[in-house]
Amino acid sequence: MSKTKRILLFTTYVIVLFFLIKINSETIVEWLNKSMFVDYTMDPGQKVKDSFSNGVLLIAVITVFIYYIAGSAIVSILLIDLLMLGLIYANNVKVMERNEFITFSELQTITSPKELLSFVNVSVGSAILVVLGVVLALAGLLFMIRMISRKVNFHTNRGVRIVLFLVSLSLLVTVFVKPNYYNEQVLEFEETHVHNWNPLQRARQNGFIPSFMHTVKPTYMDKPADYKKEMMMEISRKYNAISRKINKGRDKSLNDSQTLLYLSESLIDPKKLPNLLLNETPLPFIISVTDNNIGGSMYSQYIGGGTANIEWSVLTSFSLEVFKEPLVVTPYSDFYSDSKNHHTILDFYDNKKVAIHPYTAHLYKRRTIYDAIGFDKFRYLDHGINHTEKLGNHKRVSDEALNKDILEVVNQQDVGLIHILSMQNHSPYNQELPDTGYTPEIHSDFPKKKEKELINYLQGIHASDKAIEELVNKLKNMDKEVNLLFYGDHFPSVFRGTENRYTGDQLHETPWFIYMNKGRSQVGVQLDGLSPAFLIPVLLREGNYYVSPYLGLMDSLLTHGVKRIGKNYVVTEAGKLPDSELPEDILAMVHDYRIIQYDALFGHDWLPDEFYTQVLE
Image (tube, rainbow, N blue to C red; front, side, top):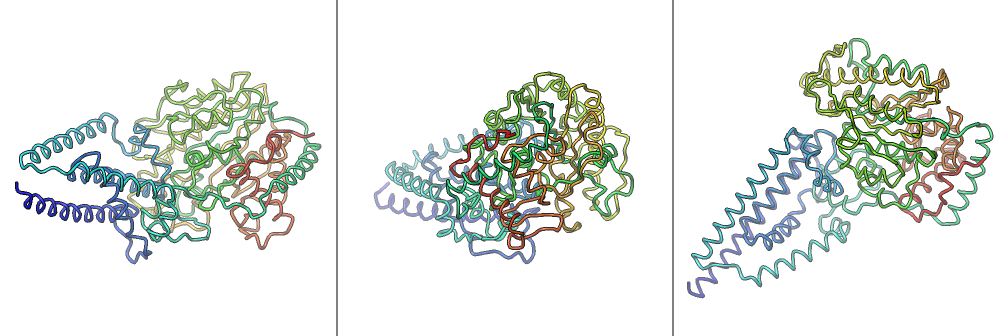
């Protein structure tokens, strides 16, 4: 081939490749955006911002980077398409299940393929076969391309590939070192400075790639303007005095009792939803215990997800609503393992602390987190869970089977705290359940296409009700003092898409109760719409247990009627109040609470350990 023909061929090749990568990148961005809508169809009249279709250059740069590795333009384009196809599909699944888009920190879940595949009903064996098939097909294609290139004596200059590699790598490093600058200046992402209750809706306006880039290095919580060491020392002194005053009226340590913190997966009280059930409740026992002991409803901002967030809030007594964007923050995955402060209710126990979760431990960094906060043992599937029976063909371990593992630990004399996360009522709800003795009658207004899933779900929580009754009866007869703090974490995914049928927080309040054996919790306080951050303070108050300075602050907030704390508001019996409408004494405590949370999670951790752990009498 003459030099002229070679130059002409190379020029044509570059032009064609440019347009192929451009068109392919534009198509990827288009489908990433479509993946944020049910059935990949944008809502009619959907308003979008200037950033919506941006990000094409980023996809193109990633394609060029892969090109250096693969050495073939066609194979590179196919590889980027396969990777993005997986992201598009996964994002759409999350949108439908949780009304959320995939964030940067969640990409690490790719290291737990078995657990991820369980959510889409694909076996690990099938997935391995598909991946092997794709790899072999791409390898064969690459081999053919190289054979053809040799025959026509046309090869891309190695120097050109190295230049493309260095340029693409430099651009990618720059983008991910300063993602917010790139997002705002290049992608034209406009950050809104209002409390964001629906990040998916905002992402549908801004576009997937700008929204995704916004999660690479986010600001989880604004730094308080008066955050200084002197301020933190004054806070420490203030609540040391308050906790001493509270403890004078109390007579025992939480360490003297055994406590079970029981998170019941996707448990709700369906009778609190209007026009849903025509017959009796599937939770007769749970409702009875709630009404006759200490209990009410807990506020959860999530539907179909958020379990790890709720358990974090319960253990730490930190509010999820204080974050800038509470619905896109997952403390376990995003920052908590790297935080300087890991003080939780576990610090109140000298005896052993055990966590029980009949599922994998690979998600949400639970093994790392549990070790950091002081659990002595973590029992999970294939590692300490001895009972794995299920309800019929349902995929998850039943609550009845979970009881057996719980009671094995309860009967150990040296265990003080047992942290339990059930799995029975986790989605999917398409499997038939055995006869649970309860047949729900669904109101005709509920969407017919979801009715069978709803029936399966309601029969499942009826089985949970029976399991909790069995557990409480076992605890009732024990000689030692035992506390059971029980709560549902969020609404099930079957209610996704029904938000317009319900008003206010009807899809965001789940049941909770505290049962204390030996008649210690009878005719206790009833609180509705309570933040999970306040469940432990209620336990300490109603059990007459000593508090630390930090939990002395929480107790004081409860005394003043505060039930939830947000970024710039609180919720009391009077409803949701902005800071500007709060009395000065309440506003001062709320401000102290927020600055304490900032110091512990993102600041210098100036407050001494004793502020969270020491009981001052």
